[in-house]
Image (cartoon, rainbow, N blue to C red; front, side):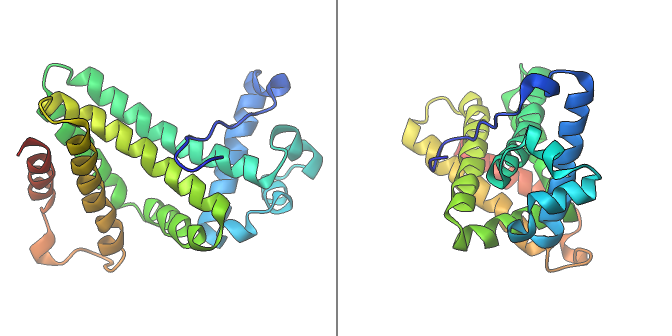
Amino acid sequence: MKAGQASHARINTGTATRQRGKSRVKSIILTAKNIFLREGYENLKLKNVAAEEGISLGNLTYYFKTKEHLYRTLIEDVLNQYNVDANRFKELYSDDPVLKFTKFIEMVLKDCKKQETRAFFYQLWSNSIHDEFIRDCRTAVYDDFLISLRDLARDINPKLDEKQFKQRTFIVISMIEGLHVMFGNYNRLPRYMQGFEKEFQEQALSVITK
């Protein structure tokens, strides 16, 4: 997968098109994600996934031929959920671009507070330092997220040129990613930070509207 390109996993459709096959694929992806969060990419081995999933290695490789294939699909599954949420807000608040944007930011803020989400990105960042394949996956994640956010921003301030859209959505994503780091420092937020979400939404919006 080239840097900057979204991944396109290819699952063996001979079985996966059937309901049982689809359910198995979802279960495998969840198992792989749990191993990745606990032990990192290095230990995301097909034999480990098969053992924890309770299936044979041959059964697993029917759906995912390689570790890289499985990881690409895992990343695609994460990206798809963000895209589903973004599209849902586009439909729900199609007549109010500002509300559509702030609701999306609100959803992302809630997601940042989840330990599972932070663990996913911590692993993604740390493994990407040493592994070119993971680095390409990380690039795909952020490129995809930038596009989703840029579409939301374009409805708010259409007079911005393409360079300004890219720069400002880059700033907003940097603000969001900083939360993963800061939330990881606390078991619970300090009192002075409680209720910060509204201020965060307003500051993110001001980056787009100014």
